[in-house]
Amino acid sequence: MAQWNQLQQLETRYLEQLYHLYSDSFPMELRQFLAPWIESQDWAYAANKESHATLVFHNLLGEIDQQYSRFLQENNVLYQHNLRRIKQHLQSKYLEKPMDIARIVARCLWEEQRLLQTATTAVQEGQAAHPSGTVVTEKQQILEHNLQDIRKRVQDMEQKMKMLENLQDDFDFNYKTLKSQGELSQDLNGNSQAAATRQKMAQLEQMLSALDQLRRQIVTEMGGLLTAMDYVQKNLTDEELADWKRRQQIACIGGPPNICLDRLETW
Image 1 (cartoon, helix red, strand yellow):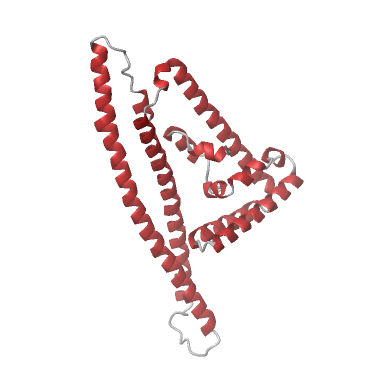
Image 2: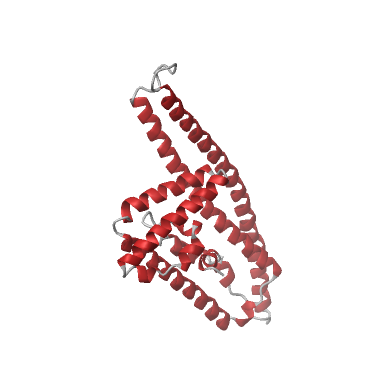
C-alpha cells in the first residue's frame, strides 16, 4: 500500500501531526495529487546533488501540468485554479534553488515514515499489553470505519475552504483591477478594448459561478458531516459507554476485569 494511503488510515492524533508537516513551502494538496510519483523519487539524493535536483524539479512541474490536464478534462475549475496557483508559487520560489524543495520533500517523507512507525509500534505494544482487546466486534469495526470517514471528510472540507478563500481573493483582485481601470463603465460597442473587456468580464462571471458552486457544495457537505458526527457521538455516548458500564458491573461481581476505556480514549 502506498505510504500516503497508509497515512490516511491513522488515528486522529497522528493525522494532526501529519497536517503540521505541510505548509505553502510544500502544500498538502500537491502531496495528495501526486502521491505515487512523489514517493517514487529519490529526494534525499536530489537534496545533495544540484543537477539531479534540477531534473527532479522540472519533472515535478511536468507532473503538475499532466495533473492539470486531467482536471481540465474533468472540467474541475477549482482544482485547476489551486494547482495553477501551486505551480506559480513553486516556480517563483524554487526555480533557482531546486535543492531547497528537494530537502523539504525528503524531510516530509522521512517524517511520514517515522509517524507510521510510531503508530505501528503503539498498536503492537497495545496488543501485547491487552491481548483480550484485540478482539473487535462488528459494531466497533463499523464505528471505526465511520470515524475514519469523518476524518477524511473533515480534511476534504478544510481543503475546499482553503480553495474557496483563494478563489475569492483572486476574484476580488481581478474585479477591483478591472474597476479601477474604468473598464467596467466603458461602452462595449466597437472600441478597441471592447473584446478584451468582454473577455475579462466573462472570466469574472465564470469565477463567480465557481464560487457559488463551491459555497453550495460546502454547505451541503457540512450538513452531511454534522449528521454523521451526531450519529457517531450518539453511538459513543449511548452505546459504548453503556457497554463499558455493563462490563464494569460484571467485573464487580467476579467477572472478567475488562473495564478499560482504551478504545474510547483512542476514538
